[in-house]
Length: 91
Image 1 (cartoon, rainbow, N blue to C red):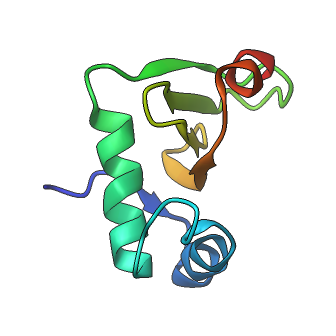
Image 2 (image 1 turned 120 degrees about the horizontal axis):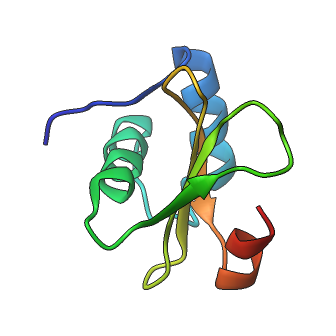
């Protein structure tokens, strides 16, 4: 897979991996990055602007797995974790 989206820096990726890596079944920060990209690029993903931040960030949600990814307006992954349909709808 070609990695299209990255975290703003390695420390941000590491921090989010440590917080959400186990729940997303990722064994490394690199796998965490790959899996976030797979969610974004999945043809079944639901996507919409994040309504409460005013920054034109996008939310990508794969309902079959509960995976959710937030991408900043300038194209950086903000975070990736597990959520549910209701949570996605509130974003």
